[in-house]
Image (tube, each protein chain N blue to C red):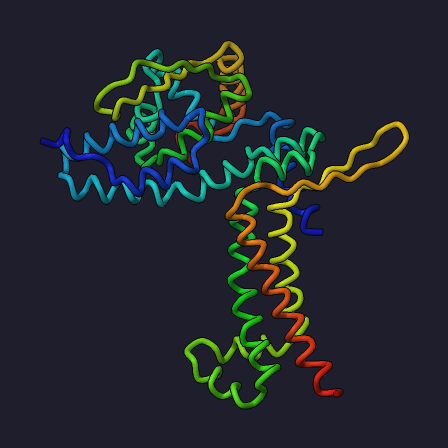
Length: 211
Length: 124
């Protein structure tokens, strides 16, 4: 019967993602072997708890190890780091980071735009929303909104556009290629819409009062 | 500034590599590999060290130094056959390389020289 019980799937996947390819099977195999020993010695619940504890305890160590042995580190230390190669290899991760940055940018820009167009009429309503009081104070600072959005836009652009500088005998050329990944393009579109919203915010805040 | 800090952080491991100093954990793992040969694999090493030191050795505390020692050429490894109790995964067996044995013998000589200064029957 114990042979049919498997280690917690989520814990196993969590750790597997951090392990280097070279030792992944060995580490997960050791954990599973010990897990089965513990089922016989202490029961299924104890074995499951032990497995989760072992995974959680080892996450920081394996994360640092993965970082120290990452491709970026190897390339940087060996002195042949190429931003272009790095961007190509990590395009998906950049898109994910861009998406994450869009969330705070969106949260800042929306109250900012509402405030600039409707002013005091919406400030009280926004402040009364749970968790929005602090956000409204931040959204009232145009430089914070501008900086956050510029960062989000830049990361999203880097995720979809590839810049390559080539030097021939006679000239320098800049090659700009757009990745054909629909999800990244959707994210870029959202970032551009947010930039447009920010532009509207800037107009509402600074130009309309002058008219 | 941030990039400089990251680069320096990246370099720290290389500085340690240049110094070629074995940590106490690495020494203990090398000794366990030697004691368990030819059946030294992660779990067995951990359980052996646990029995001797009385402390729990997590899987990361075993495998991260094992990989580092392998990269430094102090250990060699090979894969065994996949087994059902390991979910069809194979064991990775470790063995001391001639360089690893040499480093351990050097550490033994150093310890013996340093420990000779200790009084035989404790402090008077």
